[in-house]
Image (cartoon, rainbow, N blue to C red; front, top):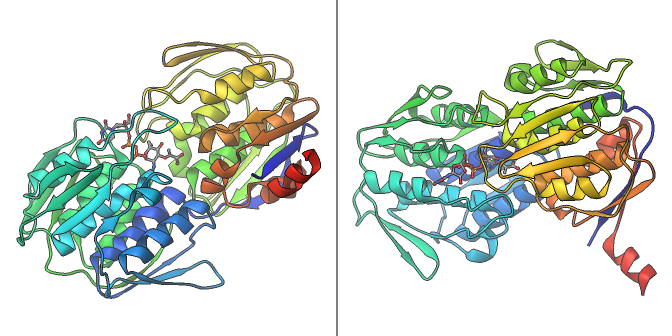
Length: 429
Ligand code: EPU
């Protein structure tokens, strides 16, 4: 298994380009199941989750072509299977997104239940409830969700989401594009990735309004056609690099980003004492002479502070000048990084979903283990500001969601390298 070795050092300085958003690209690729025509999606990030999605679509019978600029062309005219197997779903929960499109277009889907996850129980009851309201019969059999419309089309329905769910909203929205009549999703997720998907579906001939608000209306159409769509920039990757520069006392310019998608994060960086400037598609951050100020955080669905940036801000507070509280309200178990940061000298007390963090002057290196995607990013950044050499193990988590993270960090002057697993294994043999 590969490891990353990071050495704490000077400030990170320079400019980088932000990649396409993982959480936008995955549903966009899966939307290809809704049409017989060619869908072309550009600005796809080079990530493990993208490869998994390609494998999943390939197994269903979608033909895929990737060009050298990381654009993908899909052709779902030959889909021959409606089954998303456990092997793939267990490695990537977003696979649940095939449930809506397969049921809408083929009247049947068999999708493995995702099972447990490192950051919380993450049920899919809202996805199932939505499709049931639209007339699909759903049962659970041998660990699989079996959806069947009995040969009829899905019917439009009014669906209230008990909790705000990003992929839940996306699944129902995709299914509703081919349903008979109008579907309304109330208490819908407002994330930019939901809007990006709605924009692409509309370009494919769907009739969706209200995406970006908490009520989305979808008028079903007979068929969708092909389109050419560019994935929005990854706001979490952007936020992660801003935090990296901030905690190292550096300065950074990030290009190819949409600043308004990051407002809650930029607000907190400003409150921590950073200088921020932005233009249409760039953000520049400078850091104060003195230590960063600690900032209280409460995660919640967009447009509030994103749970996907919580770990990075726990780290920022760990090296800031006083005490702050971080409250995680979206996932019940998203503090695995805390125990690893404590091993690096951070002063954090956990009480349920609240972390109380007393900043320390510096962290020290330790061997640490990545547990989920964003926790891994936080540990890599911690290694870059800690005294000594930190080894981060199980970095396959980070490869799921960050495009060439060590190359981009190195471009900013970080001392970081990847050591292939086989080399470490041979050295220790
Ligand atoms: N929930 C339910 N029932 C459901 C669905 C969700 O109770 O049927 C609960 C979840 O357990 C959670 C809350 O609702 O407590 C919100 O979960 P949501 O469904 O919004 O999460 P998701 O759609 O599974 C997406 C992102 C996550 C991101 C969350 C929250 C994708 C592929 N994943 O997950 O991204 O953290 O929204 O913003 O879009 C990541 O990129 O590292 C990541 C985990």
